[in-house]
Image (cartoon, helix red, strand yellow):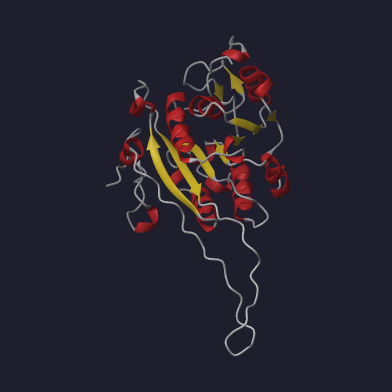
Length: 289
């Protein structure tokens, strides 16, 4: 597999490659260092159990495959069952980078439904949705920006009972996403489905790469509940029908301690710690104590 070259964006706004560069030489669209993604993917990989589902991933808003590259380094036996990106240049570069393993589609994720995702049987979702709605230099529309529609659709699917949710989810975006309505909707949907969540600001410099480019990361994992029979009425001591026995809900799994994650975790928004001020210097991490 050819290596992804560099760590800077060469596809600007997902459309314009640098002049004179061959598609296979374009750098990873993710503005984060591949090494950062490898470490985060490795953290997710260490956390999954054995089994076919845990080795299958979906890559949404895939660009040229930064998450795919990181997943291969972190968990060589894993495979990306399908990658989705509407940008034709990005999908062609993705295919050049991964060859026969590049199951990449130009289908808009807004056209996906729960049934299609269930049939792919993936235990890991990797997302790098468009960042323009949340950038400080952008129009500030956030969830109302048309480019946020794909993530909003996936969020609605995650909340739907018809979807068999993944066991793990890893998402990357710009600093500023953590204070958006899109973030609130996504986290709400994940928590309602039993996910435990960690949110981080990380930069390549945190993993030894001399590039200061802080990004927001969300890691989520879900407790898998063993299938159980439908609740049925029993017989009480008086000979009458008793109330149905409800299945006990399983609490989200606690995240183990990890030096990189512990040092750069965002303060818990829902615990009254507040949100980062809008004028924080670029690259500044909010340390969770």
